[in-house]
Length: 428
Image 1 (cartoon, rainbow, N blue to C red):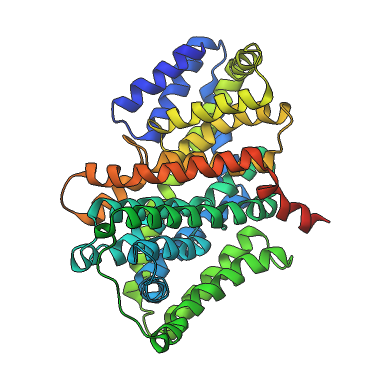
Image 2: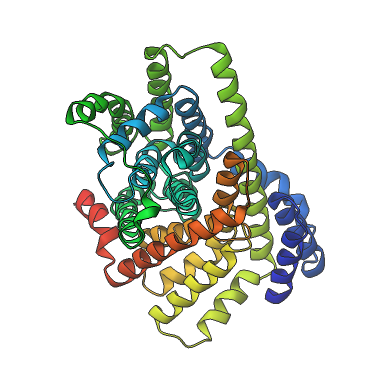
């Protein structure tokens, strides 16, 4: 049964069917073959229950927030300021790509939105400043992945809902690893540019007066971060309410800069509706598939299979990590999150691992999936914005950053306190 289900998923994915359709068709086939009950009759109840989940309301709000920051020009101002402050590091704007992605991730909650926003602002600089194109493209794709790790991450919200884990604690757990990963990205760029100075492009000249003047363009993003995250940890708002507060604040910033108009709002709402529809359809389809897998006993079969391997907890964890890395080459990160997490999370908890810690590990593995071919969605986002050349350039530039992600996973395996220290402190 486990092999047949895997083959079905692989077949439909390779057929270039949309992910949501793949999940639903797989669920229907498995239910007809392995269950005497008409499981499809439960689909409407499952769809209704999931779609009315209060926590998921934050998803369209965060998506709309990202659209507003992009189209209002706030993100472009932020990028310019970050570039002035990081211009002296070997690699120049490559660090600005990572730094701006980190700041934008702290407000958007989405990797696609982060990669698209920073990519739109930064890509014109490649030829103008003489950067190595592949490394520049890779820094945008890799920097964009921070959107699902650094709070307020949409993926962490969904993981918390699936595993009944506290979203505020997940946000705390992801904060230090998120900043560490951004630092590891920059350290990697420094090493590459010291070995190959020509990759670093032309350095931007800036005086200290210009740098301090540019801080005014960073203030809106920093304030927005404190509105969203600060309202959660002061107990003033839930994650969903914090998303709405952030949205109102972003609209206020747009008005302050004189960019608020009906045309801008129309573009933002259309973009947010398209992205939200895609996300929600995948979530609904995945929940139906998980229901079918549970009823036909495949979840229990997977648990038995792993337990019968006779491995130690660490060895089992390494097998799970390898499984996600391979699966991430063929399955989109969100669908992988909602489809595989209900199967794997109980196994990890039974091994004695903390579900909050595993949530951080899982999100990093999903980040790997975002920049590994052939399905890495950030690769296609950056290539679409680039609008020329081959996607092989983006792939080649991105794969080197996977080393940083594996390095962080290794650190988290060796020192779980990296993720668990903040949640422990705040719960005391």
